[in-house]
Length: 323
Image (tube, rainbow, N blue to C red; front, side, top):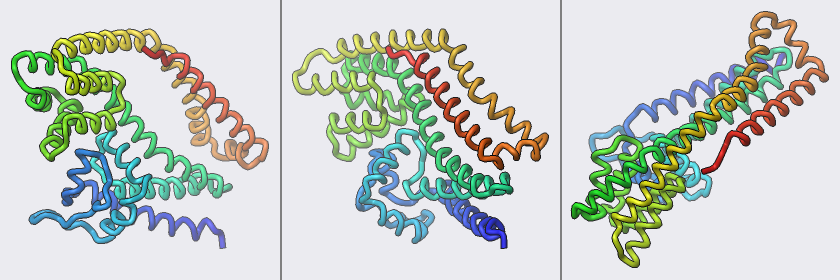
């Protein structure tokens, strides 16, 4: 019997089951107190599972057991921090379930598309399914970091004006959480909640920097922490920092405008061979199947893939100008 006929039903059933479990957990309301605290601090503790509060949907026992099993693992803390940086309202277990489902779907899809050499298709689909969630997570983190940096100059100005008018630092941060749009309001809401839960200003701001890896934010937090130790006029310091950050954002915008043609040329050159190959495969599958049925064709595909990746990385390196 063809191994593909045995493998496909098993993987299809497993992927559908994991998809339903994962999506049901994503769409349902999260009922654990520690999950809410995890949204604030992006830390997975050993007490990662609590009893659901009254009136909320109970947590499946399987998910609770998985939470307990991975709570003390170092990779769980890294994944939780990455999810917090991307502002994805998922637990580590939910993210792992969804990633597993995507890998299973990729294996099945690759085996179905490349039926003649289904093992190669399954491996390629599995690798793609493994990379897609991480690429999506990295894209979300990058977009959120850029949006945060764009708002940081106005945030520092608002903090400085609030301090100058007589507000305390905590009151100023609460005003930022109320007045500014996301993601700035979300992050400063977490900071004020952490302070309300008993953390010091320094600890709460350091947690903010752990979630948002921004050099400009690091400069602001360093100024606030130094002011806490030695005193001084914090509003004037923040005004100077805010001016520096706004100028940096302006210069970065100009650089992105000047390098837009080179960046999109890299995207086009990298995507064009893949698009042409996909079009030829749709139009003439028999003609394209010779590319991976012949060992020489497989070697050519690997060499071309490495060359395309190297060219894309070189273009990215050239147009990535640090300020």
